[in-house]
Length: 344
Image (tube, rainbow, N blue to C red; front, side, top):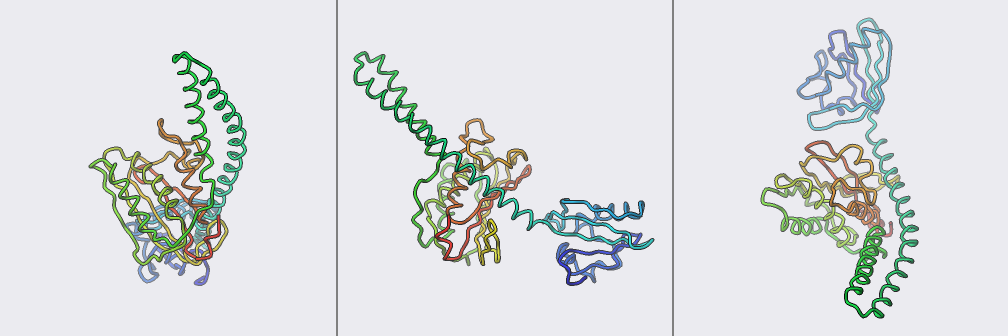
């Protein structure tokens, strides 16, 4: 059991731990010497009451059961999604097997995001082509008509047609995103974030603070800095608008080794977290947040996050979002390998 990848705990009828394997020690940040013969410390392991309730149910029914994809507060600052299997092994012992699902769920969620993004892009390309052709004809006809009309009050109407045609063309171009491949070069992720911070700080109310938590050891990588500035700026401005007049935005950078993005393994990736303490994003909107024209604000266009996802995807990366009331986190994953500059 010491070499199993999922956690194993053996409880007695008093909810004392009789055995805990290495995987469970790592999962709950406790040592076997600390908990053997004792109950799990609730102050350090917030999910202890949930596990004890499962043990109690197993003792009461005498039957094994499994709970799928439940969220456990493994430590005071970390939650994990697990499958929990509870098995009575004697009249006074119950075995718990805890299989962490976060990695598998994350990879499936990433692939779903990328599939959604690709399908949306293809749909928009076809729709934009069908819209732009007649739109160009309408604008051209309005220009010809404008030259023939003498009365200023009538020419006002043709100008409205031309202006609205231009507005629609701009909207369609915004839906399509960049139409050329990025010109990538050596880029420092902190120079990108500092540029974004300066732009947002200039327009933020006095009650908004922007906190930096950078890892200075992150090396330069191949990227198009202007595109990354635009992608990050779209996310940070969304956070700024959600906060109103008071709140905090945190820009955090880290690296992660042996990380998979959309089923492509990478030796090393950059993780950029954009965190705010605003009201959060509703659960139903979180599933569609990167779709074009989807927004939680009446005045929003719904193009900012869709464009940000497109720009990061052109770098072989991905943007994820997790939110609850009082906490929203957007995470940009960007490969650091030099060979990734041809992706996207």
